[in-house]
Image (tube, rainbow, N blue to C red):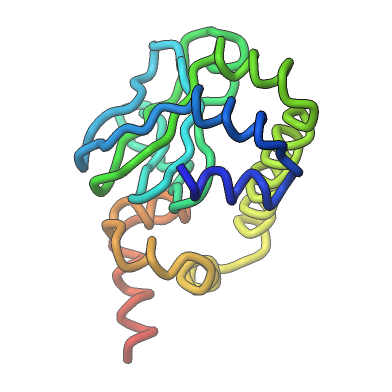
Length: 189
């Protein structure tokens, strides 16, 4: 829970009452590896803060798994549109490794928005960070080679690079696993 509080306090100032409310409404849960947190067609009921572990978010597009999110520790994740509009999700979220999450339900999230003065600022900051990452990813697909995308990924997320399968990394970077294997061999040589 302290990781979550520290993360939030890095973005906004919290009173002791705010901290107590957050601790009261976020639920800690230990989740085994390869556990589905959300399946497409279901409504996302939680926002998660990943305290430990690795999570992937993906869609099944025409029978092909397309990894759109590789979530590292100390970050929030959810199927945003499903959570906010309470409509069925197109996304799947699954733990890659054993993970510990802190999760909050939509009613509790809405309550925190009303009770904590700066909560909207936190939501805006986290949303903007995630949007900025998505825009950078789109830009990278447009201007970087596959090798450059992989090198950037390894530099930015070394723990993910070591602990996520080649299939998932390749999908996340928009290439086939065989291409990523060749790129990795070139780099090691």
